[in-house]
Amino acid sequence: MAAPQVSKRTLRVLVADDGADVVSWLGVLLRQAGYEVRTAVNGREACNIASEFAPDVALLDIGLPDMDGCDVARAIRMHEGGERTVLVAATGWGEAEDRERTQDAGFHHHLVKPVQSEQLLKLLASIRDSLPASK
Image 1 (cartoon, rainbow, N blue to C red):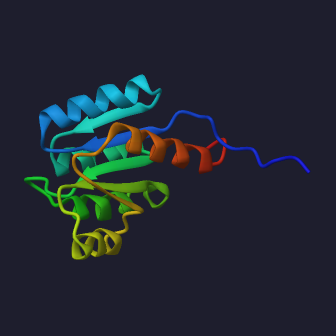
Image 2: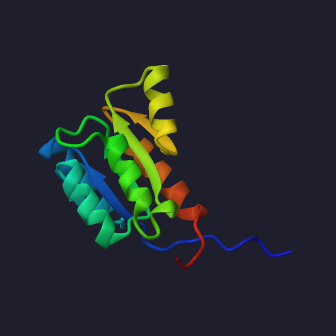
C-alpha cells in the first residue's frame, strides 16, 4: 500500500509581534526556510493582513498593544477559510493559566519566548507536512 501523500507546498505564515526586531528576525528566518511570510506589528494590522493573505499559520504574540493576540485569533477564525488557519501563540507568558487561555482562544500551539528557531522551524515543517497537497 502506498504511503499517504503529504504536502511539500509553501506555507503562508502571518507573524504578528509588537517588537519590530522580532518581526524582522522571524520574517528573515521563515523566508530563508522557504515560507511565504507577511508581518504585522499590531493586532489590527494582523487582522487586515489575515483577511487578504489567508495564512496557513498565524504566529501571534499575545501581548500586542492595541488588540490582544487572543482577540486576533478569534478574528482570524471569522475570516473566510480562517477555521483552517493553524494558530501558534508566541508569548512570554508560559504558566498553566496562560496556556489554558490560549487554548480557549483556539490556539493549536503555545510557544514561550524567546522562541528558538529550530523549535519553530520543526513545528512549521510538521504543520506543512500534515496539510493536504492543495488548499
